[in-house]
Length: 253
Image (cartoon, rainbow, N blue to C red; front, side, top):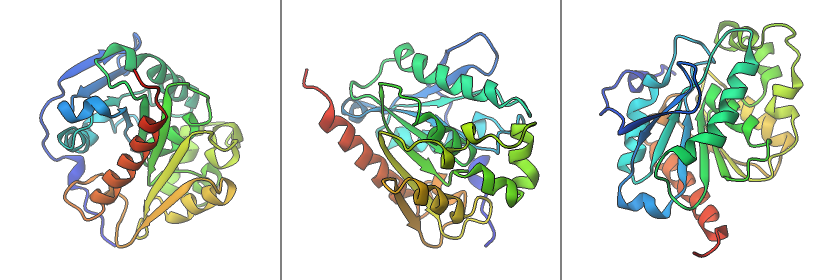
């Protein structure tokens, strides 16, 4: 199917605040507040996609995160270093953002939900295994959930190979081959996704069967981050379900 990519360049209001979790130019997060409704919900940390490429940054997810804020979620869009062949820089930034960003903003009291799309979904699934105590759940949208399969299929014109550099066999960075997350984890994936095929999510779930996998019929890769599509309500529903689990486990004040 032809992919509608208009969400990547759609105008959006500027963020309400920008916070810095480190001294590098890309170590920042753009915050959009979700209004009164967000007070009872976890903070959403959003990791954008783009096959880990340096030329694709947080601006491509502005319309998505603005829509999440309009739906009542306080969202911090995490920027991170994207240097081909130096994946450790990217992973260090994700970990640093998880540790630091929640304390830098006015935040809900019900923990943190990590949401990532595409390569951002890969990073979210990787982070889910690292034992961050504030992380209450992960929602991976069309994630690159199996790096070995991404390499075999040459997805994104060799995007995984460029991200990893040498050596390319890095099971320690591959969510499919890491231990299963000990927190609630949901994958939403479009059945018609030709950019990151559903097979990667199915491979991940086969290894980690406690993961919830939601297949969205008729949806491609970008439909999951586009509020004008029929897939968007599914994303909001699954985010709400993770939020309900998080708040039900939070201690009473």
